[in-house]
Image 1 (cartoon, rainbow, N blue to C red):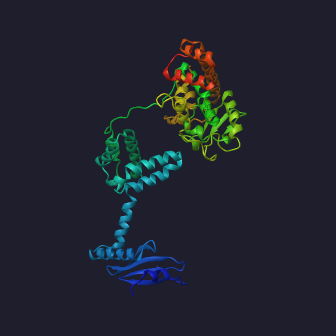
Image 2 (image 1 turned 90 degrees about the horizontal axis):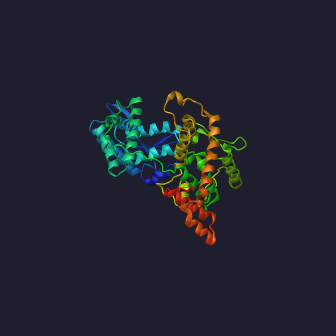
Length: 433
């Protein structure tokens, strides 16, 4: 007698597994633990075999009967449904998406979390829908180029280049694991137009830097954000490294900040010597956020860091456009001016925590050049003070004649002075007398 949904729902487990037949070899296996599993008993070349269709209720009675009909059709065509299912499973395991996700799973532990998620989202949006189900060994260079052209056509040329790079990494992993014979992405070298090299907008003229520093000092928003703005040029770490900073990483008595490898782009620990000016800002900030884990907690949750847009938004509020100054631009500013002042290039690069491409040099300790870097970071902070003081003298210059007039009429607040200074920095005026 065929099964019904009610009979299946009411089936109770016993001391031993029991079978509830539906007909045609299809039955429901009820386990002592209460599981209800669809099974098909069939014969191929005189041998009895069993094929699993899945558990109830995930696989309904109707779905199980449909699976039975498909299996019967395969048997009638001389196909073993169990062998066909296994072959499909193996093909799926060797699909581009399966190999790519396996590669990601193995590589992600060595990357920053946001880097791994960016690659995954990139593949999910622009690659998997088109070639994800294809056997990785069957994908040709023209097929991959079609995928890249779709991305290029919408104006995302840089993304297309990154996808090309990521797909090449997946193909090389497939070759290494015996699921592909070669990497077709190498055949596409030069097939995409080159990208224009992009630099983070930054103020690098010393006279304009002083005006920028005055503008940062005059920021009228959150005091925590103001501390981040004032600290950024003194330490010139990456924006994410700054906003996610934790108090446990700092030793203010030793004037040292040790960023763990897990938060660094190159996945190596990094030492930031702190100038006396930086320590003073940090001690001031400690009174505000020192009771928590983060230096710069978000407004909505003290357990999460401030938004990645906070510093850039503050710069926009001060009147600097994205083409004039960015949070990342403090690194370019420091690199440019420190090199111009003749500091050891290796010490500068080590302080910037740039990944070393030379394998021998990459093996150097994260504290390399530390004594020189300590001297450099203090000299850098002193130099910024000099630029700030020079910018304050801009009131004596011809470019501030209107400012003198306004001051005589009623005086200007610190914010007004900072806005004037920022305007000069943005427009490239010479703020010195």
